Amino acid sequence: MSAHAPVVAATAATLLFVPGDRPERFAKAVAAGADLVVLDLEDAVASADKAAARVAVTDWLATATGACAVRINADPAERAADVAALAALPASTPVTVVVAKAEQPGDLAALLAALPAGSTAVALVETARGVLAAAALAEVPGVVRLAIGTFDLAAELGIDPEDDEALAPSRGALVLASAAAGLAGPVDGVTGAVDDAELLTADTTRSRRRGFAGKLCIHPRQVPVVRAGFAPSAAEVAWAERVLASAQDGALAVVDGRMVDKPVVDRARRVLAASKTSENEEKR
Image (tube, rainbow, N blue to C red; front, side):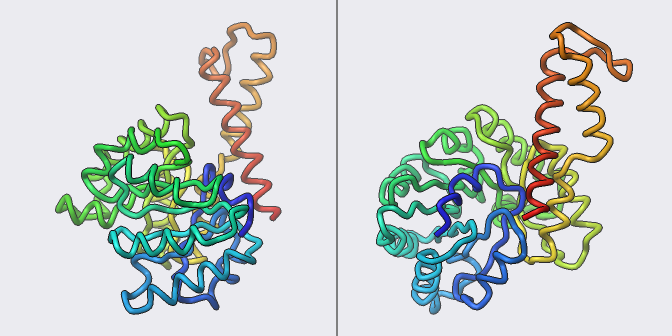
C-alpha cells in the first residue's frame, strides 16, 4: 500500500469508490486520477462476496502504489472481519479506513488501535447519532477527516437526499466539527447522477461554498469535474495575489474597496495554497 495514503486522506478533494470484489477495476480506478481511491467492502459488495472482497483488497494493498483507503462495513460482524483482515497486514503498512456509519468515538478509537501503527480513519457520518457526535468523532486521535453519507442519512431523516436545504444543518455540523478539531473541510456525499456534469458541478460548487473541501465520487468521469469545482478560479487567485501584495508590510490595506486585515490575508493564503495543490494534482 502507498505509504502516503494516510497523508492524502487528510486533504483529498476527490475520493473515488471502487467495489472491493472487482479487483480488475482497482488499477483503472487509480489511473483515473482521484486523490484517494476507496476500495469498498460495504455497500458495493453483496453479502456472499464480502469474504472474497477482503482477500482481493488486502492482496492489492500489499503491492499498490497509488493512494488507497478501505471502506469497512457498519455491520458489527462484518466490520470485525474487515478489521482482522487489515490488522494482518505488515506492521509497517499503515492503512486508511473509511468507517461507515461512524457514531461512537470510543468504538472508532478501539478500531484504530487494532490496525497497524500509523493507520488513520475518515469518519463517514451517515446517521443522526453520527451528526450529533461529529465534534467528538473529529477529536479521536487518528481521525484525519469527516465525511457525510447523504443517502443513508436522508433515509433515516425521511427526507430527499438531493434536497440541499433539508440537509444543510447536518452538513453545517460537520463543517463546524472539522474546523474546531483542526481538520481540513469535510468530504461531501455522492452525486448519484453519473452522467450529469452540470448537476455535479453545481453540487461541488455548493459544497465548497458551505465549507467542504472534498467530495465522494462513484465513477471515474466524476473525478475531473469535482477537482475543477474545488479549485480556486482565476479571479480568486488574482484577488489573493493582490491581497498578499498589499499586505506585505503587515499594515492594514484596502483591496478592491475592501479592508484587508489578518483574517483576509489568511484566506488569501489558503486560496493560493489550494490553487498550487490543484495544479500539482493536474500534473500527476
